[in-house]
Image (cartoon, rainbow, N blue to C red; front, side, top):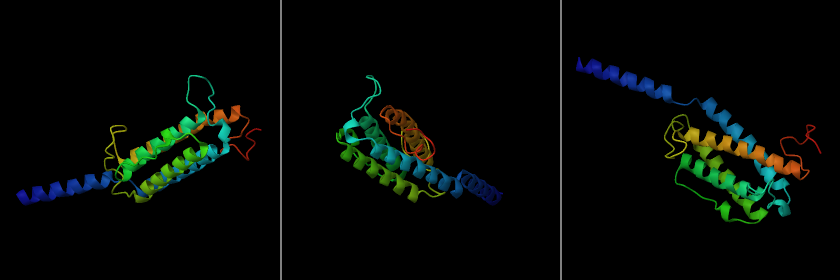
Length: 175
């Protein structure tokens, strides 16, 4: 009877473990979305002239450059949590477009490495973050959502300067 109970317990444990495994197709689709979002985000950062990195849409919000730096630092934080030891790019301390964009690209590299290392077996593992509390996949997906949200804000900054955001360029997106 003990042996049967042990076999049943092992079978149930295996079934729960398999059920918790994230499908490879979901990981691949999320990684592809990350790539599209970050391609647009880096292009947006590159489109704004250096002289406009200090531009604020209103006085009570961050400058264009500060938001780009915020995204770079946030990406390094979330993506390194999903792949190993915490890494930083120090974008918040940068002041020039060249330095901020370089930090942004370094954060994208950290994220690409995290996505490339993610497997169905590791995706559900804890990210070790306090927020969001959850899996490595959740940390990476939250990062993508955050970057896309900031892209939306910064698209307005570009439009206020008469620049068409990358995601609208070529499809009748305006000036």
